[in-house]
Amino acid sequence: MRRLLSCFLLTLLVACASDDRNDPSSRAQAPSRGPAGPVAARLVAEAEREWQAWGRIAVEGWPVALNRTPDATPELFERLMTYWAATPEGPEVISAHRDFRDIIAAPMTSTASLDPVSGLPFEVLPANVAISSYNHPAWSAAFISHVMAAAGLPRSDFDPSASHAFYVDRLIAQAMADPAGAAFIPHNPPEHPLRPGDLVCADRSYSPLWDWPSRLMETGRFRPMHCDIVVRAGGGSIDMIGGNVLDVVLRRRIPTDAQGRVLLPPPERPPFFVVFENRR
Image (tube, rainbow, N blue to C red):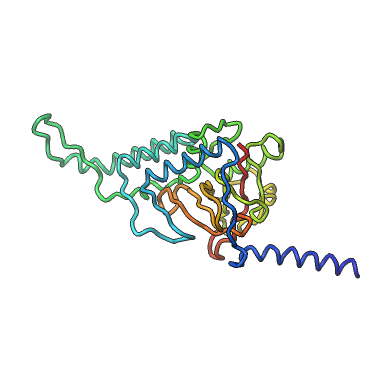
């Protein structure tokens, strides 16, 4: 009985320590942390470059909408196609999106005024077509795949995919097969103080996972997820950048505890179930 009571008290202490992470008083200034290495630093730079190209939209916490979704300008459209080109599924998606764009533009082109010099129609852009028109399929994993490749990570370190779930599976498998040499190591969110270049992943399923070992029971099965790249850490918060967040490449600031570990999202938001430590 005494041993059972001791185990119960130990469990209670661990639970209380975990709960303290969401206590605002525990967010005393977490130390600023830099990238683990040069590849992580390049990953941060590439993510920030893409964020700047989308208009440097930054928010606090978990907003549900932006005031306005950007138009599908030629520049943003081609940028989105570049993300898809980094994935094995990309060619088919790119072809479908270009066909859709041409269908939208065709009626306007047929009624366009002619250039008096060349005799050709003026360049016509589809008016009032938001970039969200190209959100199916979702492109958040394509964004991560593109930024990883742009930062110089080889496929042996990060195997691109149009699905977060499938590249997450491969990152976990690599870490389990070669813990000393893997580029990314999975941690449960309460266990790892984040630094720039790390990945933070949430499960958007109806019955979400709460830790990464639970994923081992269903490896290879699709599950809706979302991952962001940490680009700043310290001072009681992290900044992270992800694609297809409220239809754009978005920078979000969310709170951490005093050690720099990410706090739980609000109950109505998808929970974080894994963070990947970038060791490159």
